[in-house]
Length: 133
Image (cartoon, rainbow, N blue to C red; front, top):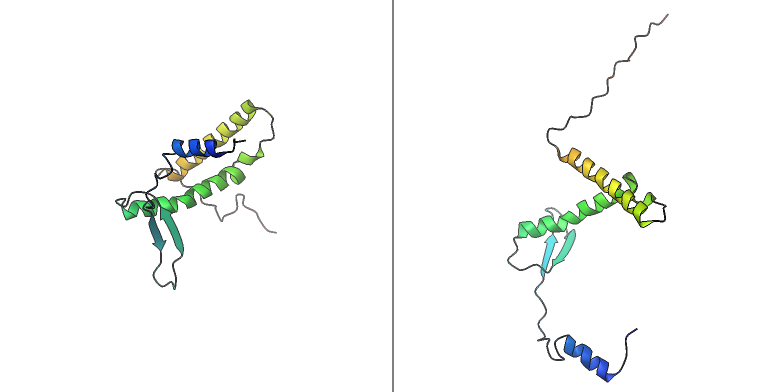
């Protein structure tokens, strides 16, 4: 709880730089809009507070990185069991999260490895020869 009163308000304003510190100019922000060819309207919007000199390619890459983060979080929760911990101790939770994170790192390295072995193709031939009578 915070104490009330004029003295406390004055102290808070002074610690924030004074009552008249704000010059009325809002910080510069960049609006990034995705409007694919053939669409009637834009499909996505992003607002960035990065410097105006930031290259547009970087802004686009970082804006779309959110999908990758959400995908990885969903994979951690549903595919690797991040939300399955039912213990009561910090140590147990820490071990669980560490193992899930290690599994996520392993799967990410496997997915990104260009020399990784491709999965074996399923054979359409039966494994044993059968004779019909």
